[in-house]
Image (cartoon, rainbow, N blue to C red; front, side, top):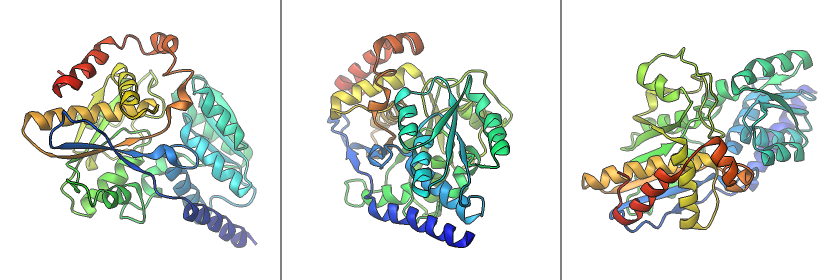
Length: 353
C-alpha cells in the first residue's frame, strides 16, 4: 500500500514536470559591450515563480525515493521564502501538510503564496534559528524535515537529466558565443552552484563559474579562507541568498571565482534592469547581474569576447513592499546613489569604476 502511494506521488510530480515548458534565456541589449553578450536564465516563469521550483521538485523526489516521505507525512522546511512557496505547491499536489520555518522579515507576498498553496508559516526572529526550529517541529509532529541546505547538492542529477546547467548550454547552442566564458550566480543553499560547477567539469566545458555573495553572508569568507566553522551574527538583507553559516550543500571546489557584492549594488541593479527589460526582478537577480557586469567590464578591458549567463531568480512583484519601496530600502539597505552613478557611467563607458 505504501509503495502504491509513493508510486502515485512520483507519477504526479513527473506529470507536472512533463506539462511544464523550459524557462526562457533572455539576451540583454547592451550595445556598449562590443563582442560580449549577457543572458538571463529567467527562472521566474516556473509555476511557483522562482528558481526554487527545480529544487523543490528534486527534494520531493529524493525524499519519496529514499522512503522518507510517505502518505500523510508532514513536510517541514527552513526557508526564507521561495523554496517554501515551491514546496508548498508540491505538498498540496500530494495532499501532505506543509510547514515553512522562516524569519519574521520574509516578504509578505511569499507568506501569502505559501498560505495560498495550503502551507502554514512558523516564524523565528533570526535566520540562524530556522535549523533548530525545523528539527524540533519534525520531531514533535513525526514529520520530515526536507533540509534544503543539506540535500540541495545531492538531490539534483548534476550529470544532466534536464537540470538547469543542461538547459543553459542547450539553449546557447545557436548563439554567437555558444559556450559561455562565465556563468554567474549567487548561493542560497549552494545547490545550484554545485550542480552547474559539476556539470561544467563533467562535460569538459571551457566555462568558468563565478559565485557572487551578498553582505552578511559567510560563503565568500569560507571560499577564501577554507574555514567551514565561520558564522555571522547578521542575516543577509538580500532575500533568498547568503547564509550565516557555511551550508553543507555549498561546494567551494567547483567554483572558479567569488566576489562579494554590496547590498546597495544589488538593489540599484534591479532598478537598472527594469529600465532595460521593462520588468521587475527580485534582489538576488541584482546581485547576479552586478557580478556579471563586473566580469563583462573586465573582459572588455582585456580585449576579450564571449558570453556570460546569469540567473533571473524570481519576479520583483514579490517585493513591492520591500526592495521596491523607497522607505523600506532607505531603512534596510541605505543610500543607493554610489551604485546608481556607477551604473549610469556603465551606460556611457562600459565601465563600473
